[in-house]
Length: 437
Image (cartoon, rainbow, N blue to C red):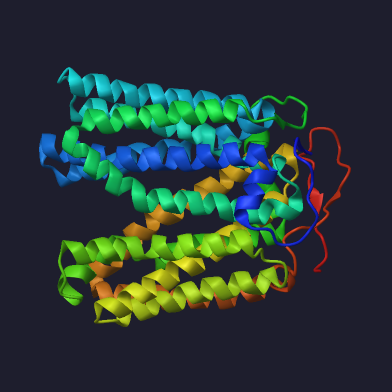
């Protein structure tokens, strides 16, 4: 297993600021995680404005998302294999440096007036490829920085940093864009280099695993592992279908203009509301860790997500819609923290890269396909009907998953002591299921 260079604290709730002071490596990780999230939010705003200014094409704006989505999905499984075979810290550092170089290239092209849509999209593909390899390694480092009993609060704290970046980053990026896109790109590249410097100073010791060639068996080992861990499969698939059915982000412009009768300022509030709810809940969970009946709380949170989606779909007033979206973001954050903590704690260190890669595929697929599904159903039946159907569908999935995954429903704690099964040479080192606690 991964070894932490930090002393283990006594069990019990601790304020999140004490958590960062007690674990210097976690502080560095937190700052790097929040900093890169902040930088990418600024880049996203600048790229969108710049591409639309160059072409005036809505299709080109759609290509921006695809340029980053496809590398993340296509390279996820190979990246997970690499994360379990090579030093994860070096992989993350390499990814951050590549992203910083790509963003710096945007600075140069913008200043020299050689920038065009093809060049921007090509650089975004490079960034997506770097992120594909960076993500599973980055996720797998965190469990080695703190004791297992502290990991759920560490995950909540890092989620809070990401949510804060999602709220503040676009606003700062838009403000700095007034000075030119090169200013935004330059600051973002600098933040990536600072993040790399912070992570380079983290003391992290990775378990030594036997080097295996990249075969279909080793690359898909994460998929095989998840199939044989009902709790892990349950939380990952539950999140996939909940977001796939209950996502409303793509429909917010329709609700803002046609249903709530508001303008761009109202749309901005609607977009910010889920992030505000998620940030508030992540800060709460960082101070008040989930310690009892985590399985039922997971299902309750996803059910709350579905109910909030229903309320939003049926609302005709802005204030009620905002409350529903804040609740939606808060429920989603409970689900995210439980899912990430359970996946990390139920996975042995030598498998964390490949399992995190599979998790990344589920996350990216649910977000992207969820927006497509919402738009498609809205085109057929209207935005309100699409949202109501999504909310009802989420509640049905919760009921079905509670029957299909009884051990997850009965699970009481996030942290467990898995029993390692001795397997024949070349196996994935599967862990035996732990009985309900």
